[in-house]
Length: 59
Image 1 (cartoon, rainbow, N blue to C red):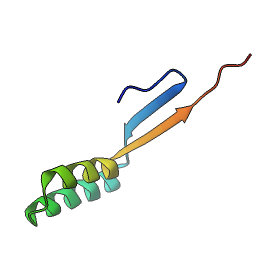
Image 2 (cartoon, rainbow, N blue to C red; image 1 turned 135 degrees about the vertical axis):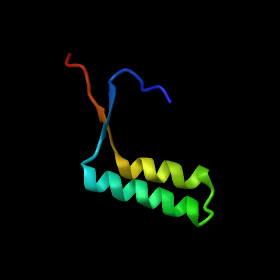
Image 3 (cartoon, rainbow, N blue to C red; image 1 turned 135 degrees about the horizontal axis):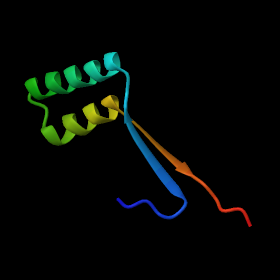
Image 4 (cartoon, one colour; image 1 turned 30 degrees about the vertical axis):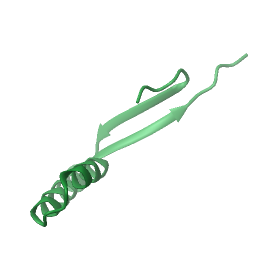
């Protein structure tokens, strides 16, 4: 996905306790035979702080 003009996407890691919870949750899901296509994106959404901002040009 390529953001269009006027949209910024910020991706940064969360604090350590939340990152550990996300990593542990993903590992537990893989251990419980959940498909990797489901568990890995969910774990990344927990570990990373993803924000999309839309801005407009002033006329």
